[in-house]
Structure formats: structure tokens, C-alpha cells
Image 1: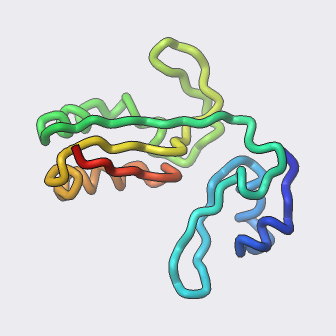
Image 2 (image 1 turned 90 degrees about the vertical axis):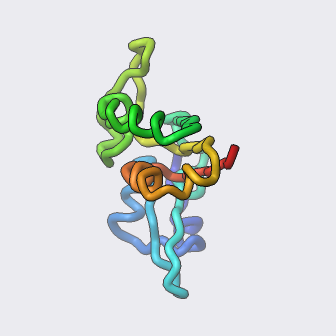
Length: 137
């Protein structure tokens, strides 16, 4: 879509590399005047939206054993652990994906797993996920 600089200004995105990233359909983080950090998403500053679709992962982790198996499968979600979003990838069926950034990762797990240090570290290993949603089961 077409970049809307007035929208970027309203959201507090300064001119420069952050705006360039948004133009390239990348989510950016900005520091607000009060010291908090917020994400600005491409769809907020592009008319006509983004052309890359939406990528969502849902993880169901009922116990630490499942988490340990997920950690052992480093190749399964590794494309989503880097910021190289233009790198082509493929899904399980072999079809080509246009991007390797997750827009959302949903975590389904008991509360004690969601707050466990190992799980917190696993979640943080996906720094380029736009939004994490934790749903205690």
C-alpha cells in the first residue's frame, strides 16, 4: 500500500529508518515520551493494507516435556526467530511463503507453564513476533 506520512507522525514515528521499515511492511518499536515502548504496524501507516498476509502460530504446551521437544525441533520455527523477513520459506506442504515474520503467536498452556522461566525464555527467543497472546488452559 501507499505510505501515509501523516499517520506515521500521529503515531510518533520519526522520519528515517523506522519509516522506511514500515514502508517495507515491517513492524517497528518506538519509545514514547513517557518511556514506554509501543509497536507500530505497517497496516497503521499504509493505505490499502499490507500485501503479505497474516502469519499466526498456535502453540499448545500442556507440560514441560512438550516444551523440551519444541526446543529440540530448532528447525521447525527457526525462520521466525530472525529479522530477515524477506527470506523465502516454505510451510509443511512445501508451498512458498512470502514472509517469515509472525504477526501473532498464541500460547495455550497452564499458567504454571506460561510463567515458568524455561517457557519465558522460549517465548523471548521469538523477538520479531508482533504480538504474543498467552491463554492459560
